[in-house]
Amino acid sequence: MVLGRGKRRRRSQRGGGKRALSGCSMLWHSLLRVLRQRWHRYKYRFVPWIALNLSQNQRTLRYVPDNSKDKIIPDEDVLGAILKVFRALFINDFSRQTDILVLLPEAIKSEYQHSLVSHHPRTEKPVNRIQQQKLCQPGEVLFNTLGFSISRETSSLISAGKGVFVTRGFVPKGTVVSMYPGTVYQQHEPIFFQSIGNPFIFRCLDGMLIDGNDKGISKVVYRSCNGRDQLGPFKMSDCTWLTSEVQNPLAVGQYVNNCSNDKAANVCYQEFDVPELFPMELKQYLPNIMFSRDTRRKGDGLFLVIENWETGKHGFKTCFWSIQGQLLNVSVLGSSLKIINCRESASLHWSGVFSPGSSLCQRNHRF
Image (cartoon, rainbow, N blue to C red):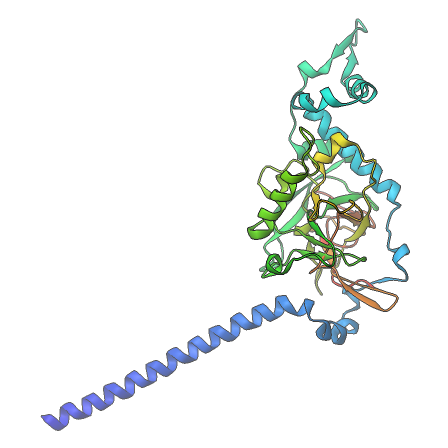
């Protein structure tokens, strides 16, 4: 009986050892899987890996011969597009702009009031549309102004999180379709803690960084800077992109997915300097703010412009540029208000014409 019990104990110990080894093996495989996932996200920031792999996938590259030629459309067209959208948003919300209107010059105030006066079709008498005005959603205002609307939805790519889709209308080539929101940092300014585990930091051509993260420390920093710069009723930037109730429907550029081997890019980044004489009453819609208050608001515009968007797909963007032999990783680090434009007409990837159901993609490399 004693010997039998001893054999059973030894068998039990051997069985427990096998279970322990099996548990360790599963833990090891889980750890490797997590490390592999982290490496897959991090490798686009690792310059040696980028340099070795650029030539293997020309589809994700964008060649730019010179900094000054990194424009899909003229800056004047960009400014005209955002002013058109911002003025439409301001007029749509005119009844809530009382505090701002009191402080505006009479010429500007009368211009807005004149835009809200129409004539009765029979009596030809002027009618004030403010009392009859129906408040539209920002997406509806965008559709009425530029002929399309976009939204942030679940990406069509596996494990890609959110993406940007065209939900209504048609987006022709060379159209500004999105803005990259966030806090703008100069090269010497601290961003280490904000950058930890943050995939929304974008580096511009001049080395400035844009932190487009709408969560965590990044969110707190942006809100703090937004409150710091407010002048009475005049807000110097828009912070609603941090919430679900977005005031500027274009402020979704940080969620445009990178292109892949299967999904070509249909939009691309274009940097834009917001002019110093930008209308004060419209700054409330700019989704960017400088980290340092004493920094001149220069180079804080990054937009996505349509390259080519095919019907039924979503937007993809380019992550890397090579300019005169200098490699820039723009999907990881960024700095100013970025403009997303269409090169051709399509949905939001980095290339073509866009129609409802289309999504945006950006190219992974810029050359």
